Image (cartoon, rainbow, N blue to C red; front, side, top):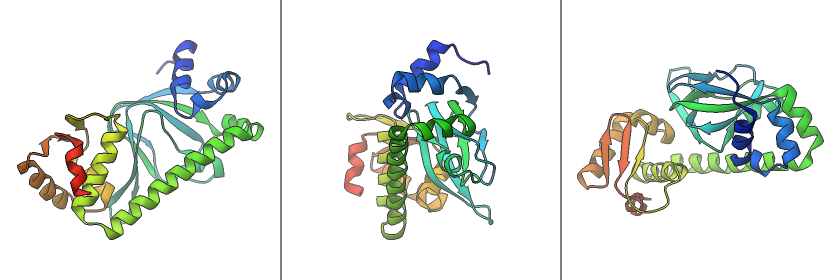
Length: 229
């Protein structure tokens, strides 16, 4: 798609959780090299094992980060929303992509290539610290997911996953919140089968906690799931 006007790209950078913390001169330097890309829901952004030549910032939409197994199963490692970045591991160490990235919804992404971003980091220690903080947050999140998968019951794991998704969607007040994901994707997030997810969701539906649709889970009030956690 054509590059956006400079003023639009500048607004995207300024409102982004990572780039917005940089000074104007630093943002301008990166903005000169960044490109805007659009992906439709279901499109592959990159595949595990492919060269890691760029880092990606989500401007709009949601991206599924997942890892396939040799048997064809898939584990969802994260769902990345607007204001977050992904692809930074391979970009930093020069290795291959460690996971698949797929557009869950229509997405607008800002892409910065390795050849432009690494020289910038080499000059700016404060930006390196920001990126290290982000990586530490991602590691803590992964550790939390592993602990939940090993030690907690399915209902608790599902409730926590749905609450996280509601929070990532910006839901803070009471009332319904709609989550656009399939039962298969929810199962992949917490390491259980779609059938197990379906069974638990229908228990909650009968209790009036959720409403179900095609690729849609509506939480009547996310706070109601806190007792399940």
